[in-house]
Length: 424
Image (cartoon, rainbow, N blue to C red; front, side, top):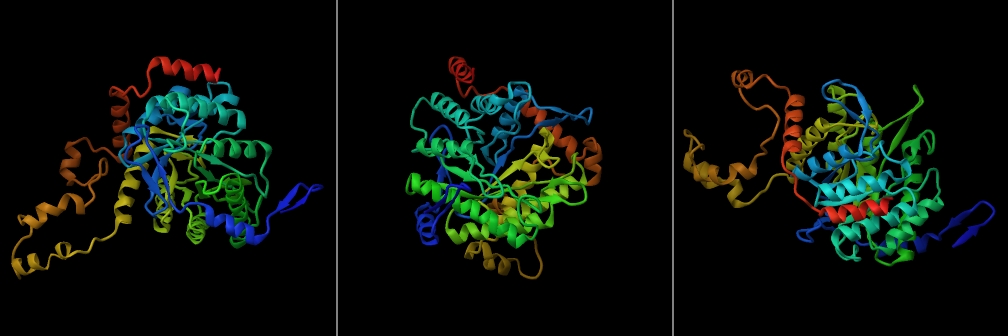
């Protein structure tokens, strides 16, 4: 390694970087708190995460946004816990009604109380990372949070090409605890990275590779994930934007790079720059998510967010879950076996007849076809009779139903008190 102490730049020889990349595992098992049935990322099957780190919630009744509260962070975690196609629960928003230096710790406390699924965190200092890992150890009743990791961690180098002292402390703490981490650069094309997509990718890739190299130097074989959080600088307005055809292309390219290096991939997705849940919000979220699914991204985050990641809503989370469920069926593809080809059944029915009552139809229709939870598939007359509800109304009612139901007690009150003591 060559170090320029004057300019604080460290350079790894190319061959050493290539050797270190090969040490990172191809797949990673992530566990729920029960320690059973882990999901394995790195196989090109996409898993969804709600969040991440919003600032505001959009009120359904007033249409106005307001700062998200600690209680609402817990409510979002509970909804995500109850949505079957969300595999991993993230911090939907950083609570604004607490001391901001401790916001991440408060959010993690609410996740631990409201879900038993695997969780993702994003501490911004080494002190907070240490605190939340202590909290998780208390919640699971063990100091070992690495052999069957119930938590994984976002860690971001700063653009253009810097690992700050805080980020470096988080990396060292995370590796020491055996917690898989997502190397999440967020360069902004035209501002903190080249405006050309190819140049942006070069810089982004260098940032990710530096994270892989550091992790493998600290602990050979440590699990890391290649992340995509591509952003453009809006030359018309002077603000960051994330739901563009360019960022969709960059997601595809990032997934290809992750496969080239043989490590799992991650991307922001379900992204929109719309400030309300409207048609623009819908098409931008669906198209950015489809880009991730088509690329075979392993972990996709940001379900429930809009307004360039600033605002969240219960309704948006339910709607995004519906779209993701549909896309998972798309990703599964067409199964081709002798039974699925159904040649015998086709010959049996012949030139005139119905497949409706065939045993083959009864056997396969539930698994072969996707059935939505809130999308409309009824005839017009039935839709009118049922109240003429649009999907936004349906999503609101579903979210409120989940929030009104009794919650599982994932940790006892005594443990909650211990978590609050750590935060204090």
